Length: 342
Ligand code: PBG
Image (tube, rainbow, N blue to C red; front, top):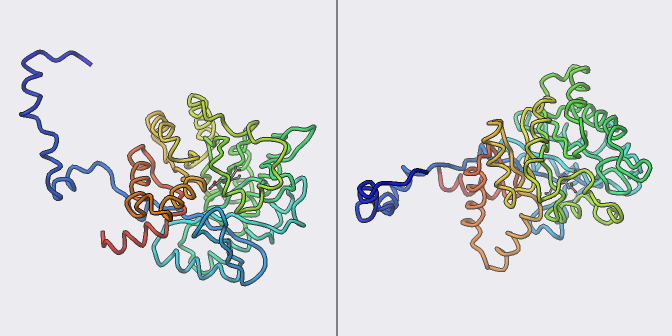
């Protein structure tokens, strides 16, 4: 920046310039506000489990439940009544169905495919997003298949493409690959197009970091206990890197992604901002399970104010450049916005 002359400095500075003038009254604060948060910005993750009449709390995520299919319609009705635009579905399948190659992922009648159909039946207008990755389905808890002691990229692509296809056939609107295999967006796009699903969108987890903030999620889908020996660092990104995130995002956009996800959320706002500046593309942040548990835990201990804290975190995502946020707080935020009548 250029140095200001003495005169300019005088004209631009205190007491003539008082930043607080604009902030003094509520009407003025409303006028100068640069960003806003609305129900349109929210995506809600829902955990599905096997069995019937099951609504069980995830122990590390107070207030978040796994639902069996027979109870799902009620939850879908509730989310619809709040006018939340979309949900993401995650399954916790029986241990007996988990295999080294995660083949249950492309069973047409698996938990997720059934859940998609239920959601579409209850409310065809609610956007249904499904995760593509093998971790809920593999007995080792990894997102891909293991060959020669490593997660094999190209073998995994074939399975992921089949997984995406059964989900599209069951009626999902958006495929969200979260596996971080190279080339998966292109492979999935091709499979979808070859089978007549040209309008199914792809929201790729383009920059997904190997993060400790996914811990509670792994409890929720039951992949934590299996995930012992190999870390996810050979496919998820190093939290030290940001130039690499931009390369990942560029590749996914070029392979045909319609929107991209950055994950986790709050510790990675700088990545969101850089991505927005570089690509000006629809960006979704994922405020992940560990962020939820951390904030919720502090709220339950009365160390933080519930409404103010949650709204502040989500507004910060908007300020950083997000179009929408995947958040476990979505129903709370929607309810609060409805009550505020804004
Ligand atoms: C797995 C997947 C993960 C999350 C979404 N999809 C966990 C992981 O990669 O281990 C995390 C979501 C959250 O923590 O809320 N493919």
